[in-house]
Image (spheres, rainbow, N blue to C red):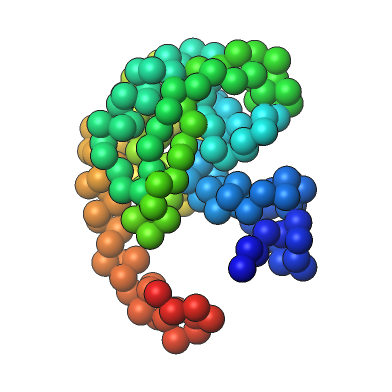
Length: 178
């Protein structure tokens, strides 16, 4: 069953996502939603919000190669150029990547967002505003660790105990069991 907000009474994450009629966009929101306050485009003003990320100063091929080298489970990155019609970089050609979810069960969306931020910071340290992601990421410490060259994988691994505790706590209340 498709739980797309455009076809049901459910309306969660963002009202703008409800207007697209595409449930895949709502599912991909956690990947890039945590980094959208930085100085990059997350695809608003295109036909694929939260499936694309980039900026006029990003080399699409370089970013795709860097992210694919991380071999993240459940996702692949393809180089893309896009021009948002609205929002950040409206009317400007942006280089970046298009995210393709290949396996939802293996996908770790917040880790994907963290990896994208880490790659942008490593490739464009003078251009990418890493500090801007702290609020939506929910962790000033994670941003500080990325600045100190801690890998996104190590940061995410440090979250695993808390994640497992949360999963145990909410398990009895889930409508659909894992």
